[in-house]
Length: 169
Image 1 (cartoon, rainbow, N blue to C red):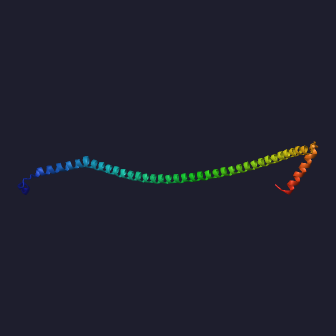
Image 2: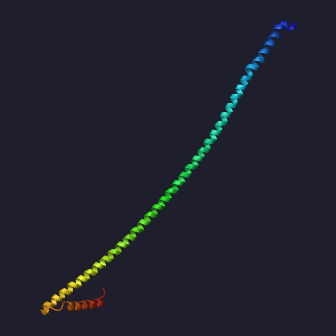
Image 3: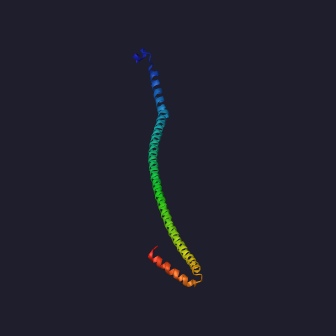
């Protein structure tokens, strides 16, 4: 131990310092190192859980975005379908209204033609009556006496009927 003494190292102090160091090391290991390691392990575990949770949220957000895109596309398609159906329904309503208007126009034209024909027949009848009366008046003036009006009308009607058979219309 003499060589240690020459270096200025006291053997008893060295042993005391080694014992103190080992006691301090054991105390620090038990009181500080294990709790610090435990705390670091817990922190690492929390960080890993946070990363896993972040990944899960990221995946869920991606799925939600895809679902949103799918729903938007479905909504657009449904909107287009509704628009197409509304367009077809509008076209059908327009065609039905147009057909109904044409039918009403044809009915109106038919009624107008019937009324025109009736008025024409009434006018022809009135004209015949006037012609017959004028003919009777002219004949009375010519022969200066009154004829039986009914017999004279029969003769005029007969002449008009013969004229009609000669010139149709």
